[in-house]
Length: 360
Length: 223
Image (cartoon, rainbow over all chains, first blue to last red):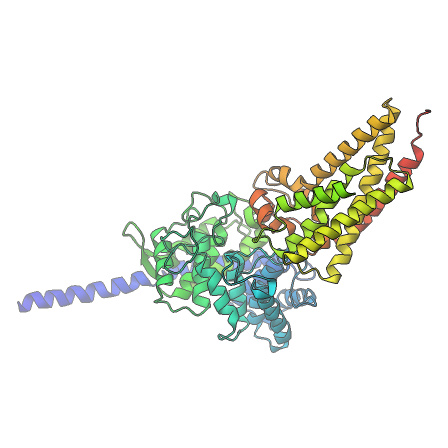
């Protein structure tokens, strides 16, 4: 009996470090991921226009700036024009209504990602621009001010900006921007946002819409998915990651059944080959970016998929992203031009941010 | 005038101006765009008599006003800063279509058609052209999305051809990302730029001047 107990103890001691090791990121891979980030940042730096912009777009410039500021290199404005010029470009696009955008399109998207980038500079000089952008986003949220009542499926949502058609993708980015801008947790914007997030989840216990299913995943907007994913109301990966971030950043507890249901959907349907839940590669890099951010925020290094296989998401996503990097350090989606994924500036910025979440 | 107003109301209702789900900004756009797109069909009178011109413009103004009231009653909240450019672009489209109808009618008469037949053909041709251009993002969408290397310049050119987009830009609206256009065209997920309001204004002035010059130059056949 004593021998048996000793054997069990020895076995436990032998297994414990192995299990712990499985949870951690492979150090060699972590180093490769850091080199991949460096190559991506080098590419982005080389692509900057004279005014620091990328593709002439506020949104892409802000995402790339965030990629620099959040890198393991710890870049900041003291490092030179490759950081200060994009900041100046973004500030030059501040509009009277508080939005930060070069065009009519994507005003809330651009403002939201710029808030995250400006907040990442940690420079108090930009506080006014951040506060005004915050006001624009909260003012742009669909509520009674736009003539919508709480029972309307659009209520609490935020769209690209200017079209009044909200969706979960833009709302999650707005939530990320509002969180970066240190919006008061008691501000009604969060509860209104949660109304829309709840109505985008296939979970009838928390979704009052008649179409709601019960698999726990998320759709693009209440009752509708884009034609690229066949319309309908089937859950898919990009939106489930977005919905989870929305819930977590809006202050919902990790143990909440909405989060547990969404996490279960995401881990059960886990794949890095397509946008999970679909057989399409549309929005694949958007998914990688949102997946990395939500997994980092959720906090678990490993999970078990629907087939019972254990995955270390950091190792697997890092390997996948490194394998997709072009020789010049950039990334692009070769299989789809939807949502600008044929634009290497955008996709590289997204992917570098994803890798930064992985190696953090 | 009354027929244009009645038709515009029926069409705008069919397009959803009073539907509960229609966003307020879309209601406003429908109120302005519907009469503009119908005006050529109701321009059967000789475009160059002042009475016919006045009747045509009065019909357009009345229809727009009526639909504007409907839109406001349904929840649209037009801002003054938004209305001025929107109505200016609408006026530009109406002027250009009137001139285009006149020039087309003259050209058709030059081919031997009698005056009533030429006017009838001209209004239908101009109306069809206007509708084709207005809906260009819909039927040229597949061309814009062609291949992984879709060009944003090609997409922008298609978008810039549409008078509906011009009205959307004037209203400060991201038209192609509103629910209907997002669901039925590929532009919601493609990279493109809208033309600027200044570029749109310049284009309408240039086209109107060119058409007016043609209208002046093309000789009426002897009666």
